[in-house]
Length: 137
Image (cartoon, rainbow, N blue to C red):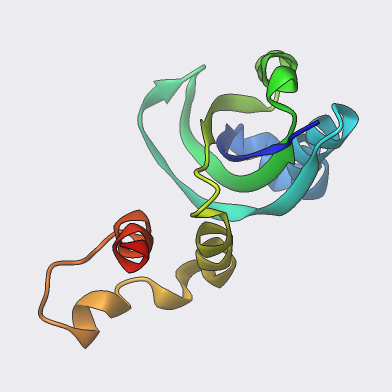
């Protein structure tokens, strides 16, 4: 069974997240592990105002997760996330195997490196994906 790596971005219901942060955020890891996957990284990305109301909420807690799971389980995973009452929205993307380590390390760094690229150089900022692909060429 070949496992693929996926990136998931979740928007949690803010009031519920504020009251029970560990329980709400633990749902992501619980669902992934229940379906035979492994969580590589799971952390709060940011809490911010939404561009438009979602299910009556104007704010949301954004949660970022990287996980390995069998591609055949992604449909069940998506269904479980849809049924969760605390997840307002979510997006799951397949990660190119060449980018996994770089993306996970970048996510671990969090806000420590936010904005430092523009301060170091006068060049246009380069995304993590573009930088990795350029290095491999």
